[in-house]
Amino acid sequence: MRTPAGKDCQHYHEDFHRGKNVQECRLVKDNPASLRWKPSDCKNCPIPEILNANASQYLELELTIKPKLLGLGRQNEVKASCLKHRISISDPYVGCPKCNEERPGLKLFWAALEDDEQS
Image (tube, rainbow, N blue to C red; front, side):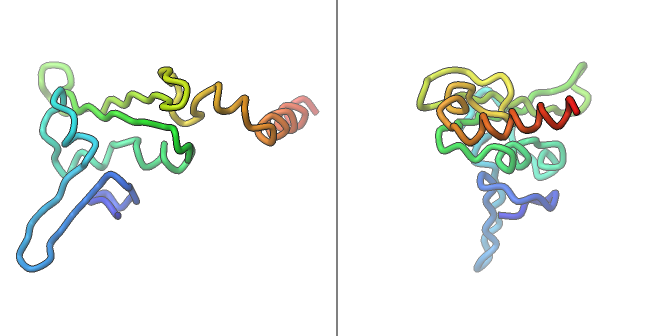
C-alpha cells in the first residue's frame, strides 16, 4: 500500500472506507518499545527500500521509533533477523549471509561484479 510519503510498503495500512479513519504502521503497532506512529514517520523510514533490495522470505524486520537527542525530532531504528538461521542481520539491504551462500547464482553475480571492477 502507498504510504503518506508516496512509497509502497507492505506494513502500512489505511482504511477510509465508509467513514473509517485508520492509518497505521503494523511494524510499530506490534512493538511496545516504540513511540506512537505518526504519518510523518514514513518520510524517513528505510523499510520500503529494504524490502525492495531484499525479498527474502525469511527476513524479519523490527521498527522502533525513538526520540532524537533532547527529544527534538524522531528517528527510525531497524533491526533485522533471519527466521531460517535464527541470526541477527547487520545489513538488512543485503540480507542473511548464510541464506546468500545457499544461492549459487548470487555467487556468480558477485564474482562478475568484482571482475568488472578490477578491469
